[in-house]
Image 1: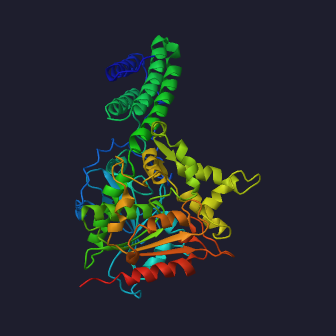
Image 2 (image 1 turned 90 degrees about the vertical axis):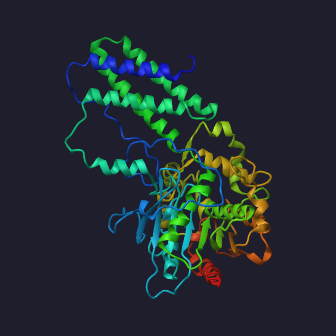
Image 3 (image 1 turned 60 degrees about the horizontal axis):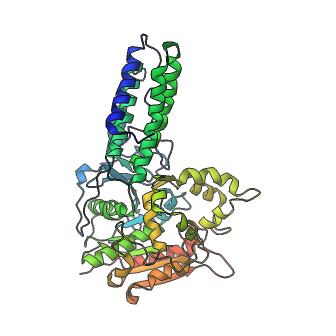
Length: 516
């Protein structure tokens, strides 16, 4: 069957709606009320809202930032934040040029804590949310930093944790206007569902995307048209069964199409839009004398910090960071034996874009229960995250079941460039971040874990050696006789409180002074 054009699709969908309307003489409970669209987030318990429109094209790169309006930000009132948020406050910062509002978890220092000159920003790894920095009252990296006097903020980039789109907030605010007993007219419901699917498919067809995306839309369209064609041949007694089948097909289409629409961003969106918006917002809420922040990044969070200071060094811009700490991070994995190298041969651009998003949280939470039982098929999962006996089993379970999110294929595709010659590069493949680290002026503390399979010490050092020696401090945690540190243990391992945290606090304290 040849690819379906937009005009043909609209005509067929409209015809199906008209045919249904003309052959439905009595009102009945509709089996095809608009289904709640699939919202693949770390916290699946939150109600979904109307699928958001496609994100606008990214703005041109610029060393300057657009200051987010404090009035436009949405600060949740005390008590309004969801139970999963264990911070003192939950804030939302608008991302200029998009309809995203990124979530920021704030931990205020107690009155008796030391006075600090800079707020502290925390960035987590790829496909993770804020939970990893605040697992429990006794295992909270963020809370510990606030107790040391730092006004601490965890940033959840777009698509992670509690971050949301403007349309989702608007839908949530209007949802309560509906009467709990109100029902959509069944015929209107079907018509609305069909029109929504048509608009989504047609909108996607207009995207300047690859042929792979168009192939997906064409295949989805053909499936719907096949059902519509069968329905037009049905006689009235069979119409109700056809309507149920059509409804199921539309629901399936809506879920797949929203996935394609929603998860359409890459690493550069985090770097050029989300993190700058977070920095601007934090500076508004926690004023500093020199307009700078301290920052800590774990895994991809550290990669973001490296990329930011590299890009600013190239542009001659101020990154507005007094000092940074990277935990298990690198922009060049080519010389290491990272376990992620096994995935690089699978990262063919055309094939990855056929799967717009990877539900990492769902995959991990579904496989984890069998990873610790015979026959131990998935025993490697635990060693990728934490070394033996370094985490309480309950906390490890909480981390795996609550900390991971769905990640766009485009993010993973761009991150795989860190495993190729030249290291991590921008989406266009024209800017190599490692090449400009020698020009940076920001002090760096780079920490590695001795048994980190994802980002081994040699990968961390591959980036460290590019930074001016007087600006960088490098340390590997773990001893031959133990304890050992895997990828997450630098943040939440049993020994981190007494071994890693003091090292970080000492470094941050040294660079918390304000230049006169």
